[in-house]
Amino acid sequence: MFGRCDTADKSWVADGWWSVLSNIVDLTVARMAFGGVQIAYRDSGAVDDTPVVLVHGMGGDGHTWDRFARRLARAGRRVIIPDLRGHGRSAHTDSYRFDEFGADLLLLCERLELRQVDLVGHSLGGYAVSCVAQERPELVRSLVIEECPLPLRSGDEELRLTRRFPTIPELWHATTSLIRHPRAVLAFDRSMTRTALEQFRKPNPEWWDRLSDITAPTLVLRGGPGGMVDPEKLAVLLDLVSDCTVTPFSCGHSIHRDRYREFEAAVIPFLAR
Image 1 (cartoon, rainbow, N blue to C red):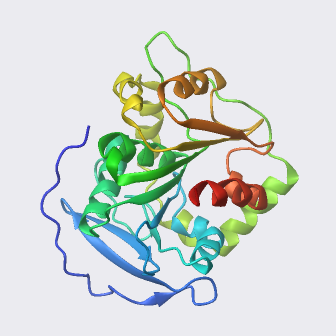
Image 2 (cartoon, helix red, strand yellow):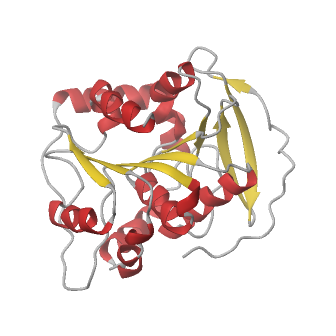
């Protein structure tokens, strides 16, 4: 599924290492170049045989995970939070194919010489982590996919997403997130929006065919009204992934933001198994 990228430049860029988020979790920011695309990530650097990699969705950046990262770091986990290409501190590029987001993530794990990881991904990030689990099943100890819109299986299907207006709490959380992290909105490469919509509307049978390659225990978090997970496709996914469970929530698309305590209660025990 993944094409190989050029050898990365392992030297850090001029603004390479610095401490950030001292009041949240001690993380370090760095960048690596994959085939000319600079990918930024934050790393808590803790000693942990199985780091947790947290991957954001389209239009955001890694700061969406700050609260959960703090919780993991306090438990002694090493936390790695990349910014996907075209987001946050990572570079803009001419290509935003969905499989490239997964390839970047896999290369980051390889360059950091990670032998095993727990992967948590929201929306587009959920698709990216699923691709890693398909390509390198032995690398992934556990897999959490939050509200990932499932691709079409064939040209005979229609793209169906639930529709409702966001609730007042959801609007409040979204607004306060924007106020806290305006950089995510400013840094987002909006040119990928049309490409993303085209890919959502295009059947992706290869992704479906490779779901059976996933061997990691998998937790799918599905939102309620306002979510983006088609229940019929989700039922197919459950049949194809050997060890998969679904936890439903009553909120919309951003569970870790709008129902944080419930999100934590579901994911922390799963990662500790």
